[in-house]
Length: 557
Image (cartoon, rainbow, N blue to C red; front, side, top):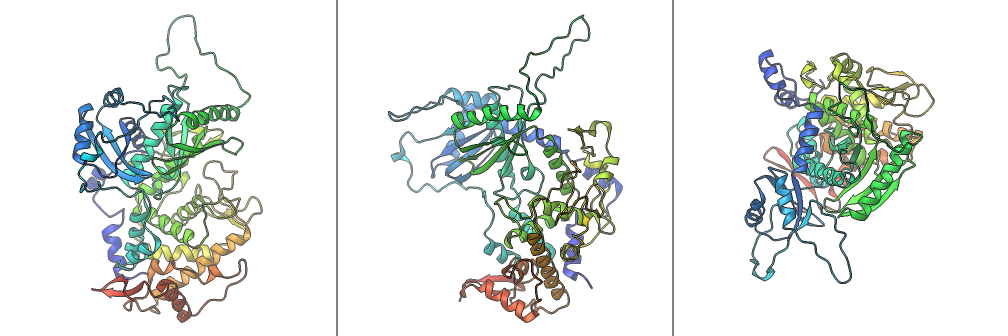
């Protein structure tokens, strides 16, 4: 029997698509916002927000009282990077102008400030000596993920594999505060770009908005110039047409390169807190890369990247349809990173985007499917959803309420085990993956791994992956499937403090330490557990114990 009773109970309580009455389902679905609506709401929110560097110990009520002189405050929070920062959202944009009117510029004999007035401020005490020495630091929201050892402890205290996956997702996913911070950075860069292009917008895309973002992930930004020159009040009468005179260049790519070059210089020279600016203009997608020190975010700014925005929207829709989608993707990506299948360094590794596509493809193959194919989403599209971008068909429904929820009730423990078994035995040598059709297809060209881009269908998003890295993925997938199957068969005792379920999969692997590309010998159950326990104990510092029926760690030797 696949899956335990506790996981069956868990899915009844937590699955995203319960059997409810049509009336109640309609009430729930009407609350779902489209991706463009969420983007627009957060962008407007960010324009009413300021970022303030504060003393480490400061009276929260006093700072809010001081700022409230300039207008009503809707929301605020604190975080730490290179100092303590407050993110403050005003109710009106005029409040920011009022604050800027009383803000001074400071300089020294050795340095001269560049007089660019941004929404990034520094707050200091006029009389630091009068500050109460016992003033407690403000509460700071986390901006990074939990340490792996701490995560494993939490996973071992869960009561089911399904809950382990939800625990991992809750610890790794972007928080509301971190999401607000990402939109604020886009808004600050937009302020700089609007010096040249007053009608432009800077929008986040990728992991920051597609619902699969992990705390600490890079911030991808899109400089959108589409609205420039589009008049909403065209004259319907009269004998004349009038248009702007503009510079002409041979291609859209060259225009993007020139625009990004200038904006990159502005960010480097005028953008407070932006350091390490690199203009990577000859890449497949030209970009400006920099670090935003006040937020601790690594940023990539691109232009003419509208397909990436549609990809972000597509993933957002998939992540919104069923909570199991996000939980499984977060789990697979964490597992891959722990075992070195993915890397932050460019190379022949499988990327997070490829793993996400593989997970979506797997969920489309379930019976019944958990998520629809891209073609099925296209069939639900209205005229307003039709988008042809650079010759690529990016049409799909944007209204989540039109998408029928799945009747699949499989628990996450079954899905996780079957994911590893499915790809551990997938015919990568001859088949490609395609979420548009939701079925395997013959490879159009010889390469180890072929995953078709959902929109640019002639592009293989995993073209960088070599045979050795694919072999490692397959070997680790088989090993992970085996571990979970042994647990299902009762070969592991789950009451004696051993790592179990997802926690066991995140420990150092027998396979990952062996020679790449060679057939691996399966360790016996006892050898595997011995290896897992040796890795976990680490000089006898973190032993597992039972605590009231829940699996927890003890720091006692």
